[in-house]
Image (cartoon, rainbow, N blue to C red; front, side):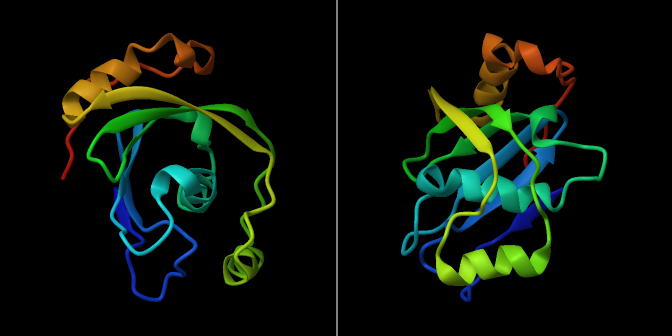
Length: 144
């Protein structure tokens, strides 16, 4: 699965990015230059992505990595995830007003600092920050 938010109508105060699911890895790539960076807007981006996950899947079911605007993969650990209201009208209202989505979402960044996707996946899967999520070790990954 892969989705692209790099549309010209997206407000400048929201990051432009592509994302996809590859086994147990949720990956995001910063694709914007005249907008907010993915690193600075990642909490909002994760809320948006959660709308597209299956109803029985949560963000905490994934190892999360992102490719920043400098071309380095880094990791994100969700340390607190409250209820996310996925009502499209409500989310659109927050986007139009430039406000962050109102959700209990706490994250922790950690450096992987690798340019190669496969190496970043190996690093995130082996990272002990994710042991409390009980995520299965992926067998293979393919980035399209």
